[in-house]
Length: 340
Image (cartoon, rainbow, N blue to C red; front, side, top):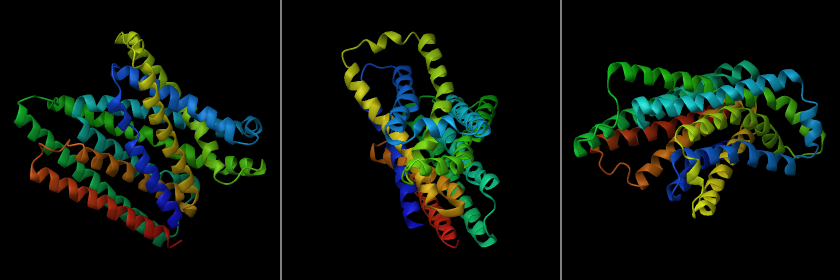
């Protein structure tokens, strides 16, 4: 169990840090960076890794039942739409509130959704998992509040309006973030519904247990990547950004974005592996720990890179309280899972 918790935390750390190389790219617009990123992380990296590492790749996926393909594909496609909606919500309500609502919804629904596939755990285990998730959500809410206070502090400092605060826009943004979070939980469902067959088929081909995580990620990323890639291709045309690929720093940017893609893919694969090590409630426990660790890492990275330098002491105190709640929530969830 401890091994699974540690792997889930490590996966969350990788997810929280994967976008860091973007800060060092030069000459690319937002659309250039992220279209190339999604192409690499959703298609190139998982395809190469899967073909190279999975023995019997063709047999495993060629014989996968149609209903599992449909369930995984549809859930993953919805996950891709959810991620796109999240980026849209940020335009309405800002990064702090949008991130908190989106991830909060993902953790709440995504952690409970696997129970539909895996079954309800014993009452004592379920109680601790539920309490832990609620503590995590409290931390997410506190982080969102801290973010709003920080935005207010920065607005007061530089007199620049950064977020549309009209009632209609705020309500629309919150709705988009919640719906996006609900759709993004398709990742958790796809992982839960595909694991039984893919694990059995993978082991039957002589693969070690950990290869199951690689096998699970292949249909998830390919299906989710369809909508993400289509969106950014549309954005490249809309923003006339194709020409920005023809720059002298393209090779350097490509290398940095490839690192992002590898980290992003590896984080998701490690989550699937961690879930397999956490017992009957592994998808629920792992999903909560994975997303919480990623949020905590992203926030700490923001502190280290001076994103909170102009925030008031009140905002920072609430932020630290939120981080404390998330850590406590992880410990409660881990303890509850240990009661299995």
